Image 1 (tube, rainbow, N blue to C red):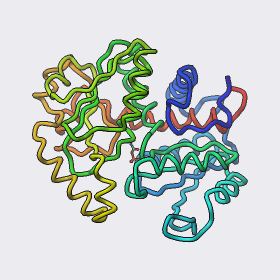
Image 2 (image 1 turned 180 degrees about the horizontal axis):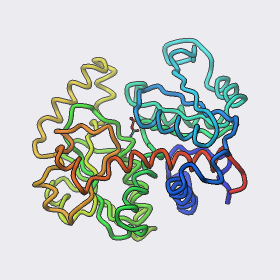
Image 3 (image 1 turned 45 degrees about the vertical axis):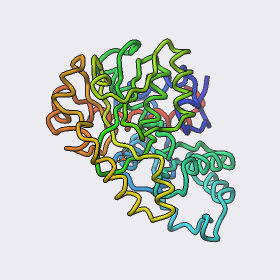
Image 4 (image 1 turned 90 degrees about the vertical axis):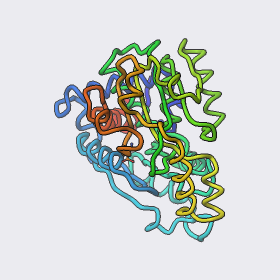
Length: 344
Ligand code: CP
């Protein structure tokens, strides 16, 4: 089984065996960071990082990953590239992806809510790039999914519990906050963890439904893996007996329409006001005391005091920084497998 040349838009696109192979290599890179036999597999190769939206972890971890594999990651901003969009004339995706494929060994793309008009447009753009490019297209977080984050989450939970997470309860819980978050990390988490046989509880106040197609995939994943997927709207029920708490704000589905009608700033303000009504939706001592001494995880950036208290985020059961570090190891594995060599 080779992953050479493959795209990664969502972990659902790869088999469980392919994901496990990636996680094994990521752990090897973690254990032998500067001394792994594949450390030069990107020698003289370039990875393009195409950012429509800002980032801390993703940009820096991909740059470090490329460096540690002997290659180079180049930062690109679409606004400087005369690309065609809904509002402007310019170079087509077909032409841009064909040309970029002649230079680079792989292309990463980040495109989130504020850079699109409706849910799904970001995913469609990645699919269009993937269709035309002759090198791998890797999601660096888009409106639907964040596969690198999902793999880093799994790596962190396994390191602190067990390689076999079957039967462990993950609570993926909505939290209040002022950052108006994307659905991508949350949808990726519930997909990959239901697939890898965890008992996944998605908890949120009424009105914060995610993509129904993702719910359907989670149900199918759980049926196939022997895990579980359920949705609850009661906070105490959600936290009860949890082994892992992943507390994260996300926007309502109404954001896109509001942004089209009233502008992005007004749509964000409306989301912040809505979210502020849900007192209690924060990972704090009281909520964590209901759990099975749960780990606390978060993809970052953390909205401290809203999504989680400092005490929990900085406490002995927090794996937040380990998961952030894992982004580096997971992305090294993805790049080595898809762009580095046929032979692993
Ligand atoms: N988790 C994550 O993707 O972080 P950044 O937005 O900082 O890249």
